[in-house]
Image (cartoon, rainbow, N blue to C red; front, side, top):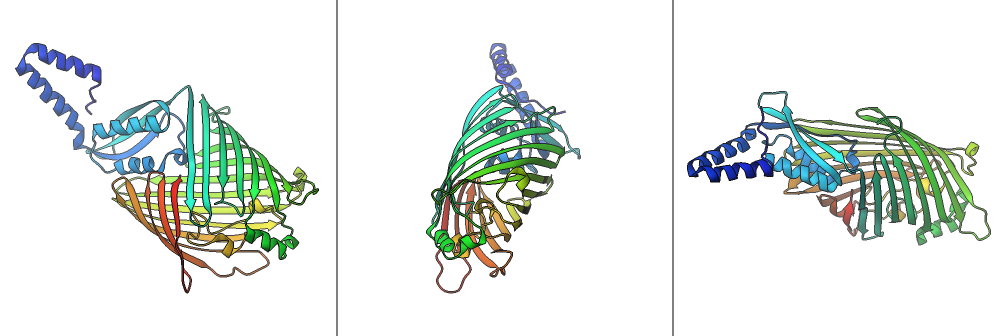
Length: 431
């Protein structure tokens, strides 16, 4: 029903035959080739999918993800489809990507599927995050991965001043088996070794009474985190594991402290294709620090996040919510912070709470418009961070504008406060 693209070898035979058979036959052959190349343009692309191996959406670069989504609703262009297959092969380091067309739900619609084939052994270097924040400095991560069948080995270097109360710098390593007994069960184990740096604001807050709450600064942090992931359904994955961490206190002569916890996660992701494209993404995480695992800390940490995105033509709108709660005594790296590159953008995290908090609620609304390969957006963040024995300290707000092209982001944000405000600038690469 659908015309296949000419590969280079058949095309060469066709043109050679035409040249040998005379100008009239050559002209007819070229007209037939042009007609076959254009026949698929009568059809509209109903959906785009990727199959052949497990490709997690989070591992697709944002720009590539957006271009795949943008194909839905467009006319079928075999050249554009071929270019996308080549880009998928390059970006995902695959052995091959084959494009297949099938009937859609309507007579004038088709479905496009990219069947991908992994290399037996592959090596890649990636930069998951490299971001400059005008108040927090640089945050960077670089990783080198080797793939052998379902097995992946990753080694990386990190200097992160964006996610936690402290800046942590060091190395990470991870091993993953994507097929344990079946494609629905995966195993992974991660290792990390970090040196911690604390801001002057955090150190002053500790000296003023923060230590009385049971918190303790540490100089180094090392951890091991094994776990299994189960594909319960097409849109649902469940994870069970543990995290074993050891911290060396800054106080000389003090013994090491352990924070050992059981972990569980449930992740739901669902997309609705059509003229209006919708994406739902939700996650629940539980960390249970228990003395039965030899932990010096006993605590329960729960977080829930939800993201809804809708796309119509070149317009995009999204709503992101995150909430969390900690009960018991948790170490610093488990505490919540606001005022990062993704939460309350424009705020100084240490002005909110230099020690972090045990309760958090945050929401971000954004509207974007696609310009060529990039998306310009405006956003509004609101959130509150507090401790269980104190009030919320009020809800804070921030506004900003940004531009994203692929994984490159450029953002300017303002805290909503009375009096003089200074903007925060962020630029870099962030998946």
